[in-house]
Length: 415
Length: 109
Image 1 (spheres, rainbow over the protein chains, first blue to last red):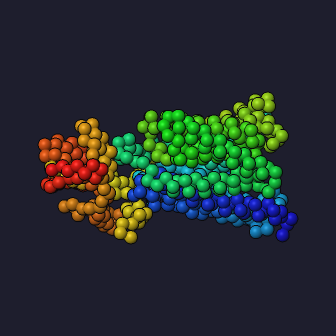
Image 2 (tube, each protein chain N blue to C red):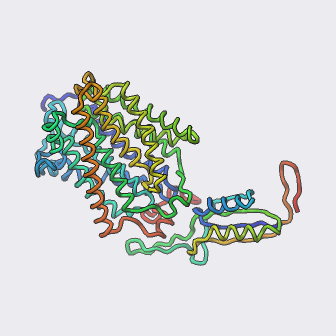
Image 3 (spheres, rainbow over the protein chains, first blue to last red):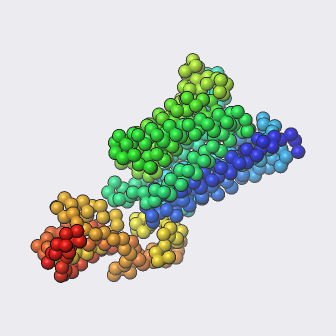
C-alpha cells in the first residue's frame, strides 16, 4: 500500500459514518415535526434519499462531480463511472495520505444528505415513487454539476479565479449542500402546493422529543461533516470542529431569545437555531476562528428565524423550513465566509482583512448556484409532476402517507 | 341537562373549539377515538390493489349543558365541523341525570 496516513484515513472513515448517521437523524428531526399519520413517511424519505443517492453516486454521481471537466467545466466526465479505474490502494488525487475510496465515500454522504434536506418541501403529501424519480434527476442535474463547479474544478471556480483572482470558498458545502437543497425546497413547495388545510387545520409537531433526538444526531454528525472536510486529522479539522460547535451554540441561543421576545422560548426554536448556526458555519469552518463563529452563528439564528416568519406570513407551505434554515443560512454562510475569512486560520483573507475580491467571489458563487438551482429544480419538478404527479390524492393525504404509502403505522392502536 | 357527544374530524377541532368559545361555551372534554360510519371507512386503490382503511382517527367532544343551550351548541358544532364530504361525523344528545362539581360538591340537575 502507498504511504497512507492511518490517522487521516481513520478520521475520514469515522467522519463518513457520522454524516450517514446525521442523514438518518435528519429524518427524526423532520419526523417529529409532522402529524402522527405521516411520521414513518417523513423519516423514510431521509433513509430513501440515503440509499438512492448512494447508488447514484457510485454509478455516475462521483464522476460527474469530481471527474475531469467536460462541457466547458459544466460537469465532470464519466471516467470514474461505476468507480472504474479507482484501485483499492489508490490515493485521493492531490491527497497522498488518504485512500481514494475514503474520499469517494465521504463525498457520497454529502450528496445523500442534500437530497434528504429538501424533502422538507414534500412533507405529508408526496408520492414515494415520484420522489424516487425526482431525487435521481435532481441529484444528477443539480447537485452533481454544482459540486463540480465548487469543488471539482468546474467553470465557476475557474472563471471567478481568473476574473477576480479569488476562487470561491466552500469548506464543507454551504453552497453545494445547503443553498441547493434550501432553494430547491422552496421551488418544489411552490410546484407541489400547500398541504390540504394548511393555515386552517392544526398541523402542530406531533412529537417534539423525536425532533430533539434528530437535532442531537445532526449536531453530532456535523462535526464529521465540517471537521471531516479538512480531509485530514489536523489543525484545520480541530478548528472546524470548534467553530462548528460555537456557531451552533450561538445560533441556538439567538433563535431561542428571539422567539422568547415574541412568545415563548420553545425547544423547537433552540433546535432550529442550532441547525441554522451549523449551516452558516459550514462554508466558513476552515477559514474563520471562534470569534467570527459566534457572529456567524448568532446572525444565522436571527436571520433564519426571520426567514421562517416571512415564509409563514406569505402562506408558503415549505413545510419544515429547509429554505429558511438551509437556504438562507447557507446564503449567509457563503457571504459571511467572504467577510470573516482570516488568513491566519485558512490562508485566505476576507473583506474585514481588505480582500474585496474574495467577498465578491462568494456573492457571485452563491448567486449563480441559487439561479441554477431554482431554474433546473423547477423544470425537473414540472416534468415529474406532468409524467407521474408529485402528490397523493386528497383522500390519501387525509388518511396519511404512513398507511397509504407504506402500510404501516408509527403508533399502532391496541398494539 | 344533556350531554352532547360530537364525533368530528381531528383537523376541525381547533375551528369548533374556537367557535364554541366565541359563543361563551368553554367547558368540554375531548377524546381521541377511532371509528367508522356507513361507508365502512375509506376504500382506496394503491398500485392496483384495493386498500380499506376501516377505522379512522376521529375526535370526540363531550359537553354537558342545560337543555336550553343544546340547539345552539349543536348548530355551532355542525356548522364548523362540516366539509360536506363523507366522514364529517355525528352528534349525539344524551340525557344526563346529575352532575357534581368535585371541588365544591355542588350538584347540578
